[in-house]
Image (spheres, helix red, strand yellow):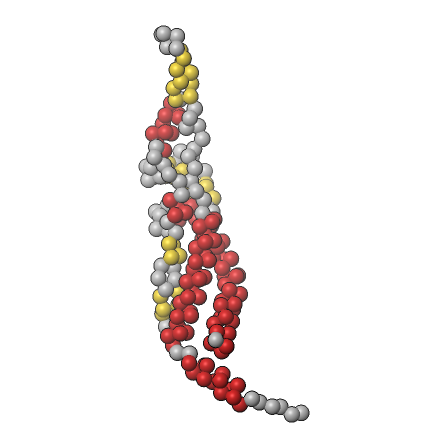
Length: 181
């Protein structure tokens, strides 16, 4: 069996590898970490529920005045709900997802995806009661358990599954660019 080796090709590979410096590798790694974080952020934002006003806020009753005219009035429950939920705009939890900065610790790179909204933990893992954003409090009208949505947990599990393939494609493109580019 006879094997031929192109010495010039080996020399080109050696030169290309020697061109790679620590800065390029760190730059590639940071870009990969940021891409994974962006993908995780997209998944978690799509899974985050948007609050809704409770139903019954426009319930009315009809009454006839002394002049015989009909008038509509809010029911007591509807008036109370409107007072509590006045000015409520949903989507705060969804809008507040944030990605931190890339942190290098030894040979390990990390980035944090978090939500600073004070009730994010309760939506993620579940809670008792009903949270009213305008009051900034949870009302314990009933003691039933509201199950969590696990939007970050499920998204993280998906990224653990999909991440290696994403990194492999990104690394292949990087190596192709270094050797052929």
